[in-house]
Image 1 (spheres, rainbow, N blue to C red):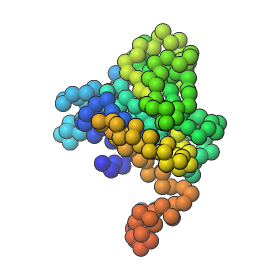
Image 2 (image 1 turned 180 degrees about the vertical axis):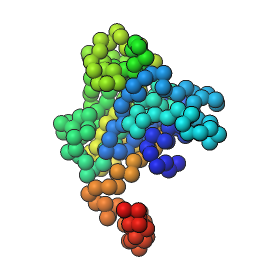
Image 3 (image 1 turned 120 degrees about the vertical axis):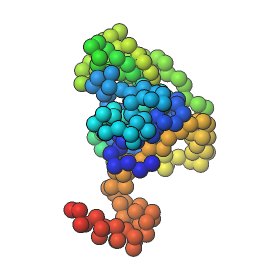
Amino acid sequence: YVVEEHHEALPYWVDHKAGGLLVHIDAHPDLALPTRFSSIGRMGPDRPGSSALEASRPKANVWMQANDEFITSSVIMGAHSVLVWVWPAWDAEGPRHLHRNHTGTLPLLRRDHLGVAEPDRSCSCVTGTLEWDPLDGPPPELEELGPMRCQDAEDADIPQETCVFKASALTLTIGEETLLSWDPKRLSFWRMWLEGFKHATLDMDEDYFSKADFANRLDAALGSKSLGRLNALLADFC
């Protein structure tokens, strides 16, 4: 599916089988929490946010998350249980990364527990992180990994006991440059792990193509003539 606003993909995600893998390729993690827990949709054929209901009702009456809240919502709704965030090579030193000071050559792994705190506030409790090498087999479940930091949707720290967990996701973060530096054996084990999921979603934001190597990437995808025609058409809107 191609959608104008990134979060508009959510109804289509939850129309499919639950509990799968999400590979999120984007310069932004998009892991914010919805302010009100009750605003999060539910699974089921008549749930708010389904693509069928979106087609049959005015959009004002259909639940939809804000632009950077849709991934955590998909976890709470049961659509995804494992998140892989890959940021593009051009943004390797960017300020948005959860672990921008990490200089290792392996993905960082953590578990995000998501839930609700009174009164109707979304909350999350996040474990510490560790490096995971695909050569060592599947990643550990990480139900507990040292003290957890708990926050509400306004990024205020809260006591862990005030956050009632409703869902959790295993979260991996890794840069594109790191993946490209791996030897074939490690890449093969990484790919086998990804392909082991029965249900998986590939989610790519357009900003992946938007910075360094812009011309090279789009030329390869479209060809220089098609790219020139597209630029000419878009110029009418600028």
